Amino acid sequence: MFVTALQGQQLAGPLCAAVANLCVALQPQVSPRTAAGFQEVLRRLHAPLQVAVAGRIKSGKSTLVNALIGRRVAPTDVGECTRLVTRYQYGTVDRIEVVLRDGRRQVLPFDANGMIPASLGLDGVSHIEAYLTNAVLRDITVIDTPGLGSLDATSVARTEELLDPVSSNAVAGAEAVVYVVTQGVRADDQSTLAAFTAATASREAGPVNAIAALNKVDAVAPETVEGSDGDVWRAAQILAAKQADLLKPRVADVLPVISLLAESAETGEFTSADAEALRALAALDADTRTMMLMSGDLFTSWECDVAAGVRSRLLEKLDLYGIGRALQALDAEPALPAGALRRVLFDASGFAAVRSRLDEVFRARADGIKAAAALASVTALASGDPGERQRVHDAIEVLLARPEAHQLRLLEALTLVSSGAVALAPDLTDEVLRVGSTPDVAARLGLAGRPGAELTAFALERAGWWRSFASFGATPAQARVAHVVHRAYFLIWQQLRAGGHR
Image (tube, rainbow, N blue to C red):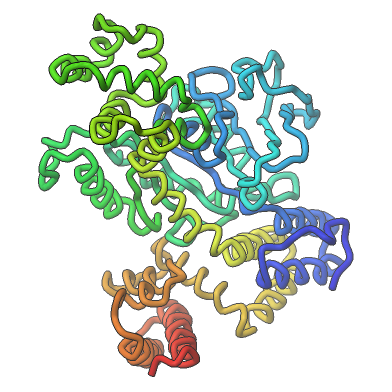
């Protein structure tokens, strides 16, 4: 056990602990510059998992950030703060620290609405650190980035600067990415996602540490999507599946979501007064309601008993799709209370699936993701002196040789395959990604819902196949991956046998 200023702070798990001990053991053996970088690696190993939310300008990133945090704190209107990287992290006191380019910090309060002020009134701002007494942020730090593809080139530069994995002998990169897209994946989305190498501590985004959210799906015209049968959500799922194929294998999944509805439902923005206004609108005759829901202008300008200002606020919080879903729910149950109506809106947002996938891909694998990112950073920090580089390489190889470190080998193999550094046949690539991209055993085997005995037999059969492939016919690089996949299947087989599946 090592003693540092970080002692007592929680590590994500045994892999992070092993990497932390490696850094401490190596510090006396490397240059002061590299040792200082290792100290920063240690600090980040003890910090929560850092997740960057990236995407194009006006893709709805900030509303998704607010939904993730459960508080409307990220500014969503175009302004100074939307052009700055903002890190949302846990703190015992709510506060904003504006970090200037010269390293100085200016502490500011949140505005009267509990949000980051639209204007900071300061020159030379690098980025914003927001501290919130929010339980969600105890095990995850959310990094809201400026919209990519913005006309403001300095905004993108600031994103790249903050997410640069090695800067001034320190590691400051995010370890996972949520990439937000809207209806169409553009040609440069692939390259943009790949460029988030900086956001994943020297490793390209891949199925282990990246998911995508297809946002604003309420704007989809279902009649333009074959197979949707006129249903907006079915159309959104079809589009998400197509985008998953386009972004594969850089993301684990593409999930449809309406972040505006999620934000309103999760942050308390939807109030009892909003529910009563919707109840009054539900009492209107069907033809009037149909006309009002044709456009935002008609909805706010139509003559009815609900004040135009109230309708404007509903439109800002729910948009026409959310209003329509709420009215359908009230048609079915006119006395539906505000809390139940909020749950209807939350369900309509698709955010539950996003949060579940975040838990599955990120939180459940935080130990491996953080440890792998830290090892990549340790390697990058020691890339100068050949003797130092060899000492670090040897120490890492000793760590990776331990049976409990196999998950790191698997993450490394996934990164090599998903980035194209190791080429495999398409079916084998899919198999590697499947085996390493989910903690669910049946899903890893591609046999969801099948009996345990079948899972056990299949795991053993595939373990043998990959061992043979590694020995006969594979290139050296392919063999390296194949040995890791063989070991993964063998460990699955052992796990299934231990559980009584024979």
